Length: 327
Image (cartoon, rainbow, N blue to C red; front, side):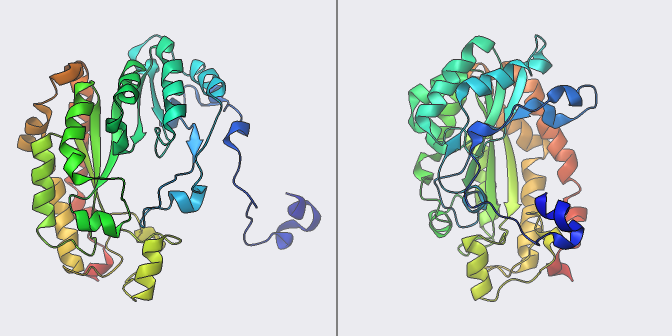
């Protein structure tokens, strides 16, 4: 602002960077009343932390927010929450936008205990590590957790190693899903296709796993080398990047040359996986397990979520039609 005041637009630098990451404890509570009645979905969401101690090769979070986990004071979170919730089911729901709400276990337990008196219903993102700590999982459930978005990423040990996602252990996946479900928590699992160890069989193997463990909802994406990540640097060195149009870096387009399949095969595999997992037989098969842990009470919204994804991904062919692999 000072540069603009002194010299106008001509005085602005191309980039401005902080010498250190902002302190989340200094983030003011947003004036949500300005959004009331205007239909903004994000008025039901809040963020309590930034940073990630993990260093997955494809992920931009640690590069963008740093590796040190930083969080807001719990009293500030509760104060913001009190201004968001009401008595109706709709106004009791909140979503946490944190990349990993259990990134600091001690903080997460304190937060969940503080949430219990407010009888909120919430969903957020978590690492699969939450299933290693029964007390943490129980507190999450008691605090109103009804859904977790979890990055499984791959069912291939080699691909997880390639991604440096060493905290994920495939041998624990099925047990983790079962345990989280027993606490009445739905799971939306995220999987990435296109690692160097992925061949054309990865799509069927992944879908088979998802249907066997009965994940409630699923997100598939194509491996995307976001600038600044280790993945981008690797593919740049290997001269495998096919497209520099950043609008195609949306996780549905193939912008690099895969190793064990063609770009076209990767694109078609993504389409097939979405069509299969959101077919009506697959939806019913996966949600048939929703009667454990009292999850049946919220089966309606989860079923509607699946139908919404089904409508969206019926158009997957159109979404990926302009992939650089097709040009």
